[in-house]
Length: 216
Picture: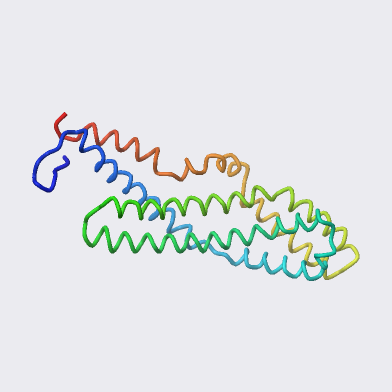
């Protein structure tokens, strides 16, 4: 039952908005607690290594003198560790920010306001976007990565140091594709729905409204 500050009980039409706010905030908190916390501690060592390998290849190949198409495929390859690392930092920042809001605003005062909800929702949306973009860059660059590896192999046949870098880069390329499976490709198209609290929270909201005892 929803009760106003003055002790009166509003009709169900007026009770719906605060109930919806409460249910959706709970959905956000659950996602950020269970998923955000897990994503925030994902290791980044392999991405740092990949960035380092690409940097060494850039030096060896004299990148400005490469055909424009190969420069483009290299930049696509480079965008993978750059994007993943950037968004991983964002995930950590957002998760830490949410923890502050949850502990200092919700648990301490036991009050959920529209302003607090908006803060929670902002954290959630940024988390969704960051995870989405991490997957997106890995899927979107697949063909470019293959093309650059093919070119690099042709150059590496005449250079042992390049051959070593080629082998290492190919291993990371396979690691990226292994980490993003066919199932991930399909789910990526609906990732926002998979991660969002809206569908589950809407169902929960309907259940709660059905048993709410405010006047109808």
